[in-house]
Length: 113
Ligand SMILES: [Zn+2]
Image (cartoon, rainbow, N blue to C red):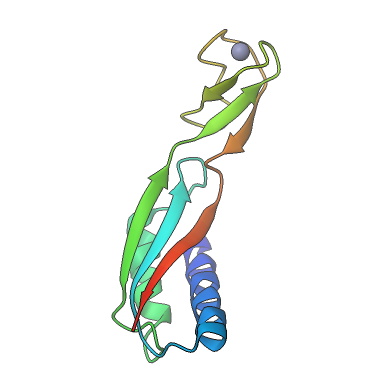
């Protein structure tokens, strides 16, 4: 499952931050998920609570912030909102629109103790 490896990735980021910043407990993890990243918010929440069991992030709340997709149209050279990958340009109807934002998932903030 794709979300499982992402959840493990989030935990690795938290553990690395804990080493550097020397905190022992994570209360909230804020994660940005792009609309084009093909990540199920519900699945990632489930996987996250599974992989953090017995770690410093056990019981932490996973707060998900959705980031809208953006793309650069090769036809009209504008940056346009993009609802899905491979959609035509909403401004001119042209192709291709290369995704420039909203394709990734990243840990934005940790609330620690
Ligand atoms: Zn266009």
